[in-house]
Image 1 (cartoon, helix red, strand yellow):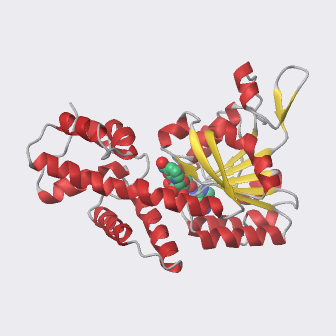
Image 2 (spheres, helix red, strand yellow):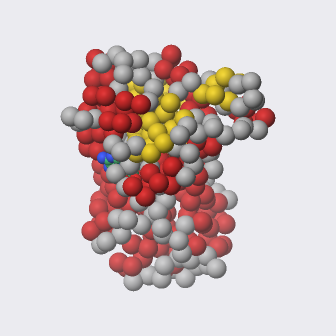
Length: 326
Ligand code: NAD
């Protein structure tokens, strides 16, 4: 059943690309197929529903689909049903291999998407896969946009994500209303492929900073310093970084290591960064060191924890008390 929710006036102002119906509700032109309803996809698809888009939802996990159906999204049985019933198909999947099989596989999105429809991949994947998806979509007369997501899962919950969009100008105009329903900051980075490339640059810094933070706080603990005072000093100087200031106080430092963004996904992203850097002949020794710190964390059984738990992994291996804010 399509999602039909009465929008308040500020929502009406913020959501463009629809038509005001006689009953005052917004009727959006696109029917959005949403594939991948995990920690990020669930709130993103939920926000589309809440903002009045017709959403057809699919995930290999039936519980995730049922949660979206409770918000009036239409549950789908498989990828083929999503692709055949939608004008725009969004993918929010873990890694390049999964995106490749869901979009290009034998019964995948492109086998069933109509000419004139649009695919928007919002997963974090590698540029080569993104370029292949864009080329294969173009062969079928399907538009392709890459729009990876910045900021934390908690921002996605609140509809406050940032998007890095790679798209032809007319495709950017087409996806903008959907992005405005899921986030509040949108950058058009260039043609298809630019979003994925920008995301790797962003995630190199955001993820590597976690290992630097881990080492700094482990040292602070070992030296017997007061954690709150140390943080106040770091927040007051150029040592400041977004992970330490925005993510960590509400996660690991508060004894919450549930993901968020897993150490496994962070390791995947640093691997994508290094592959892209090797391909482009850009030496990135810090990325290699950070990636291997994440390899160690996975090997020691912490892959499913929030990436702020990197400090616990280091403290545990060095016999240092985990830093916690009282
Ligand atoms: P997640 O593991 O929580 O969710 C992935 C979802 O995809 C799961 O629900 C899983 O069941 C589903 N899935 C897997 N294979 C599938 C298939 N073949 N068909 C249909 N569904 C399938 O991951 P996440 O945290 O939501 O991240 C998704 C993507 O977004 C990743 O590329 C990640 O790097 C990126 N990302 C994550 C965050 C974050 O903070 N979690 C932030 C920005 C970007």
